[in-house]
Amino acid sequence: LSEAGIDRPTIRPGRSIERSGVFSRLPVTVDARADLAKLTTFLKAFEDAPLLHQIRRLRIQPVLKENKIESYDLSMSLEGVSMPDSFA
Image 1 (cartoon, rainbow, N blue to C red):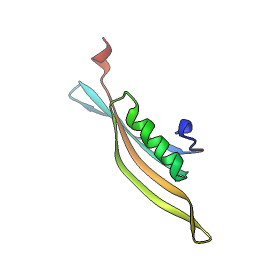
Image 2: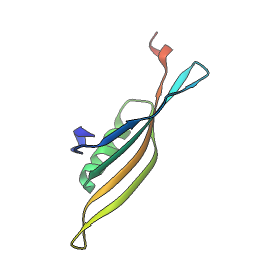
Image 3: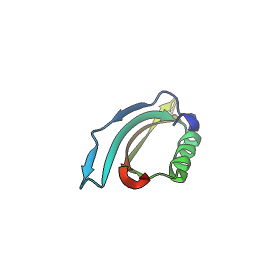
């Protein structure tokens, strides 16, 4: 997020969910405010990262100032996968 220029996001890690002792799902919720350029920079970097992760939910709400879109309020549910034995 910071590499995309998104300042002061609220990041709330969820409880990890172990699946059959093989992998764990790691949910995270992120709330932030960004302009369109920063949002697209973040989405591209997220897509290009060599990790097992996905965006499960993305809500984008425009923030208006004098009837013009100033920025966007973002709410994202993200999920990563941890495979502890994959590096053994």
